[in-house]
Length: 124
Image (cartoon, rainbow, N blue to C red; front, side):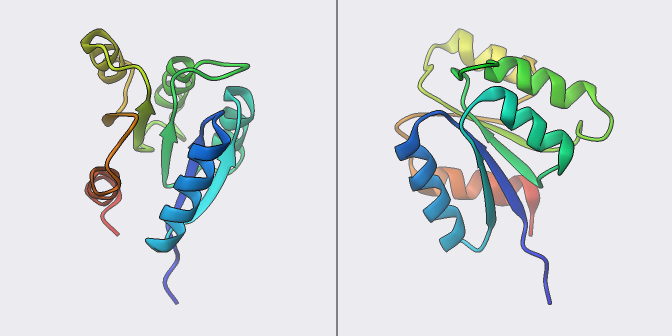
């Protein structure tokens, strides 16, 4: 039996979490959700996922800091990160890449862009 890839969604927007959870499950992934940065980081270090979908603006700990923490820990450094955020400035995109995001998508997003990005990063 094949192990499903597990994706951690870190976003404080309940509607986005529900949408992503439903969509990812329909694509055959297992999901976990954190609604703030601190609990998201705890989940990453306690039970590392196969991929993280990360918002930048979060309560308790911003997405930029979560991404930095993921990248500087040797256990989690290779986990792919997709930034999914409302921050649309070019500066934010550059910062996202510099701190270690593999893909930077802005809200609203096209589900096929997310799906293609996930498949590109974790090649099930």
